[in-house]
Length: 132
Ligand SMILES: [Zn+2]
Image (cartoon, rainbow, N blue to C red; front, side):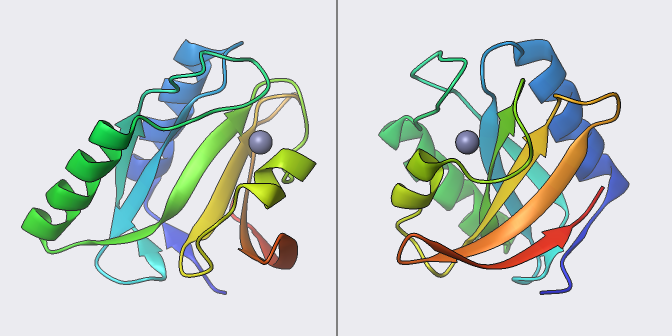
């Protein structure tokens, strides 16, 4: 995959996730191309759950519009696992509907945060890359 994320974008989502914990945090990751993340676009976890997340459709629409206006593409979405490892849960795999975006998971369960990105097609993890 060879995905890169700027330190600024990573720090933005890390701080957001720490602030939201123990509730799962989420957002979109945007960039100039499908392999480069430069912007964290924070989203509300409308489930307010410690074990899963859902986007607000209105916010999703706003995120798409923002990306278009900025000349950026949606590289993928991310969410945090406050107390579990950085890998997709069964539910995460089932809900990964879009094979054209990547799925980033930040785990805060260990001493240091772990940040992985996955490509998921038809509920199956095809690739994984460690970013932090
Ligand atoms: Zn998850």
